[in-house]
Length: 328
Ligand code: BYC
Image 1: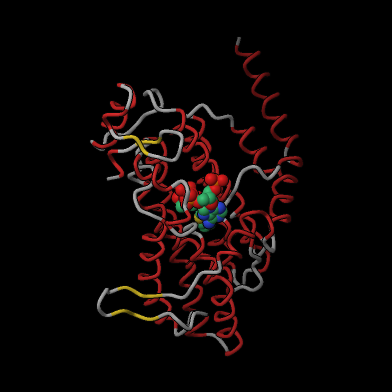
Image 2: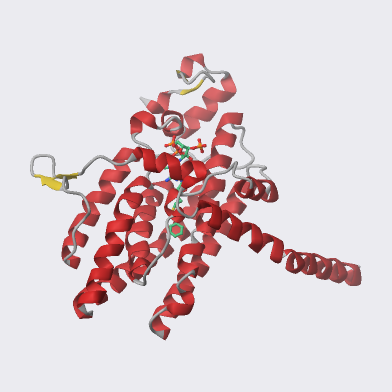
């Protein structure tokens, strides 16, 4: 049903018959699974939605480096340190592909980054939680990157070409991230002391619910979903992806020998899915509004990074200008 409809501006979706010839051609291209490319005609609202989603996705990658950066100097072995460093560098790369994909829509990178810094743009709620122990590096890789993969695999088929293509590379790297995280936890659970095992369980207790919140509000409270699904920007609803993540994660949790902080979690033989308890949506919306445990600290760290790096950018521009001048 979604594929036949497009936004009218009043939250209703138009049928193909109600569209202008341009809109109709655009929607038919999407219905036929032909990618939209930067130079194709597109409705303003499609462009805006993509700039919003891709910029927030890019900001999430960049802010997502901070909770892990917190543990780089305290990684327990050289091998773990190198893995963590490689993962964080990959995240910087993902942010850069995504900002580039966003620029193909005519958006200005500096302006979008300003929006992050002054609170107008969002980034994933998950990065507003602190990383308190080494097991958190395992849990972030396993649960946070695990959730990111479930969300991003369908985005490889998103309707906008540059975004879809960026996602292919990103997903390959996310799979390595997820495995390195799970391997940290398995090692702690299988070879660790009682204290180390308790650290893993404590970490899972803190990240379990925030990881489920990463998929966004439930479908009935997701204002952007209907239109984004009609445009095939989103290929599945928030609740569908949350369920998919849960179904793949619970067996991994059991293999670790840990438990979820959810007394209502149980397998339903009839549906073949895990059922789970009520998400604390008040907490989710508080965090998204800027009132999570680390929101201020994260944005402050990004602002400082931009300010402190200004001289590097200026030097690079001056160097490029000098070379150009010499070559002329
Ligand atoms: N946190 O109508 P809805 C990663 C906002 S992982 C904060 O459902 P939409 C990484 C939403 O923006 C994470 N805000 O929106 C992993 C909207 O507000 P605006 C990054 C959230 O866009 C490891 C409002 O709530 N991944 O990168 O249709 C290491 C209503 O929601 C959240 C992506 O960004 C949230 N969790 O669906 C390092 C994937 N959820 O914008 C990095 C791409 C919702 O209208 N994005 N909101 O003011 C998406 O797939 C979609 O944007 C979402 C939300 C499923 C997240």
